[in-house]
Length: 426
Image (tube, rainbow, N blue to C red; front, side, top):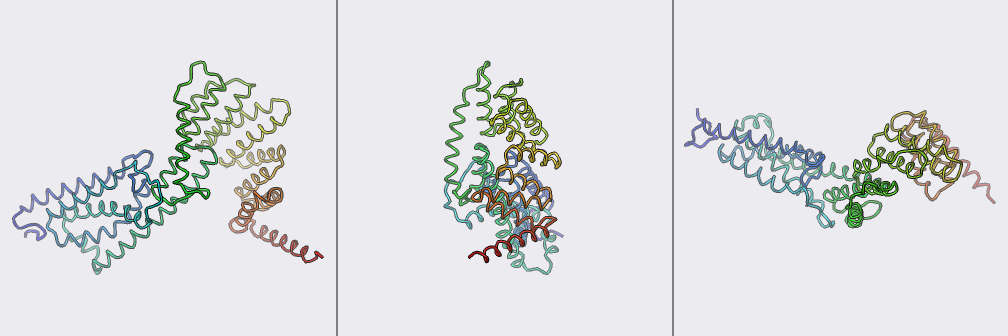
């Protein structure tokens, strides 16, 4: 019996071969769309990142199935296949502008949501229609047996308008936190790239209280200035100071491999440029999460400083190197070595900064009491800087960590002591 979904004057076998070819081609195109390495996990403009694109595509499936059911029951196979190709092509055209950037927060949240949802919906609908054209609509009727088309589409619309925006908001919060860290570390090249990515997802985003669309022009100027400085290659006989300066500039731009290559000739003990180069190398590896390498170069810098006569500069240099050693050891899970390094930092520089570093270490090591004690010491020594972060750390200790009952009791006892003293005041 002839399939009723095909036109009466079309050969059933030819129609099925053609529609199967269309479905196969669209599925292969979809695989390429999802797997093409858009510059380290990037995706076309509406999504910026591949994970954001994947969330939108998955969230579009329920509504796409509803639309496929709606059209598939009304269109013959060949028109259904043609429509799937048209929708797929339009969707790719809309979403294939990876270099576009949003510079001003003029686009509404709803418009951005629709802008990202439409291509994902178009791609999933086109694949669904191609499959219906090839194998018929029966599988969809079985899948949604007992469901009305309106109910399926209503549920799908809710999923598409709720799930992806929620994910995008979380992704932006994560990236903004990373941007703040990049700016603090003077990694302006990477910060600029991250800012532009967040702006594409949320043009109204801000970092450290400043709108990103105002931050980006400043970063652009800084990056252009640095790029102009490194445009001229270093001469073969460049001095150690020039190599160190070039290495810093490249590291700030995020061109870490080039920075390490420029610093490589700086070897030999006993001069200031070398110790600065070792610290810079340690910082580059630390920022890249290569903790073993970072610890090795920080330890090298520490050894150079330890061989020098005792001076304020020596103490400051040792503190910088020890802080890097401690952080790297902590990240590798070597808590005994990290604690010893942090303790040496405190001995050399008994400051609020050192106490708070120890508080953060002990909090990470699940040692609630010493973490609380050092946080309190930092808050007492520099309340303008550590009152808020210290309070947040102590609250986190009392909520999430082992020993929280002791922290809670200590905090409660301290509060009662303060209240008692205030009552006794004349």
